[in-house]
Image (cartoon, rainbow, N blue to C red; front, side, top):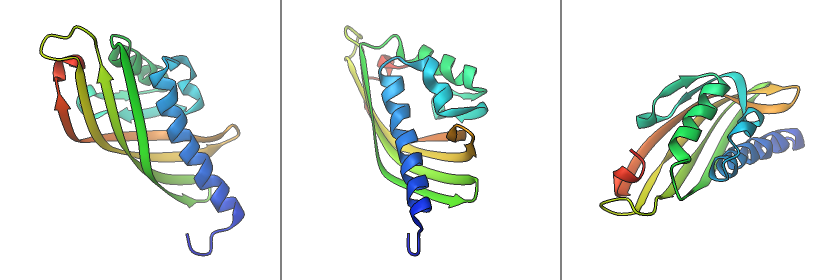
Length: 146
């Protein structure tokens, strides 16, 4: 970020922290806290898992997808954010390892992809207004998740 101000750098870090916090919340079953990540009217386009509108629908989708698992671990990397006043676009790569003990055909599913986010600055900090997940690869047993 050539010519970035301290405020710009703080915004970029806040957005990165938001993306990382999302991973921690969903991996630890704290779905009710996703209102700290998303706007009330957020749209989540979660690839094969579906398109949902509103933070309550995002919470329900995450709960439905992850509660049946024995464990999940979402890792984010290569964060990129572009700030334009009180809006921003951001992306990061993800790698997720899903584990459900006793699944016929194997207990593990690994996937990699990218999150593309549109964000807005609110009086409570940055929030994701739209999140699009693009899955780029997977390996293992899809029955762990689907």
